[in-house]
Length: 472
Image 1 (cartoon, one colour):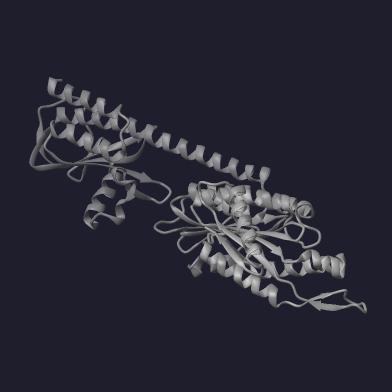
Image 2 (spheres, helix red, strand yellow; image 1 turned 180 degrees about the vertical axis):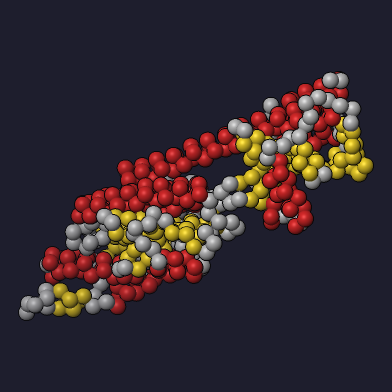
């Protein structure tokens, strides 16, 4: 073998030991090959058994069906099929190297070499030559060594990528299971599960539904505008671990509890059908998610009386502080707005002094009910202590919070509260509230946020009560 061929193979080996991304790897191989042969282009194509398609390695594994002309696609698929059991496909025809090197040379336009793993072909290397190029037998033997070098490199790349996917999969399984160690609130943990699934199955859209009153309700993300998703939900059967529809581009994976469907995770592909690997991973992740959600429901039932205020049925202060930490974490992670509201019943002591503590309790219950009714399901109200209430308003800017606050203030002002019911002293009384608002600054803590809202509440009471003040 002459020095030029040895230099070519040595430079190829030097390239293949580098840590290069796919695009740079192919370009560097192309560059060294152009110094050895008259080629126009070099491409690496890998067969995907999950979709029975061929992908371009240097172009982010894109399917060639979507990006090349019909005649080019046909020639690549034909070459992949014909390469099995042969050394090359040259000018569209299968070719096996002879046992000895001869002096024969011939005109060449295209050459395909197999990419092999464990004796099985899983792709082809395409070389396109300049017009009127010639190739001899010695060059073909060198090309076989060149192809074997690339095969080994790609085997390692594919193996590493699969290993990374497996690591990420097991991390997702572990993280979903770990949620229940510190959280049991369904409205909090389901979005976390959705985010984990979305990060792992990044090629597809993920939706999480829970069943409420025998209907599926979307709980993550905020919207689903594809009616096909809702159609497949109607066909769910608890006896199946998954259901595929619409050319296998939408998969529904039921969440089960005691053999009953309690929800569903839906994966939707925008381009190609869900692969066997995706389906297998999603089935396992769904089972883990179902177990986590079921445990959360059980814990929630046991703990609800320890987390709710007995008089108002709102969150108690301890639970509110837990939820505050959770919402601060979500806000920081997602960069979404968050507002805090502190509410105090004006002249509440005089209600107790004038009408008795039973009347005071009724005022607290009524005001708590008005607060709950005026808020969204995602808002978090709590009895903070005495006649004071605290509210978290996720995904809310301060201008929106002020509108909510004014609506709540007006609703309390207009309400008639019946005290001493079923007695001769039954009366209708009215109360008002004062309110302080603050919007979360990403640099502050949850405690600092409520200190600012409490300061605004103090300003509201100092300035005459029955009003909303904002701390800016």
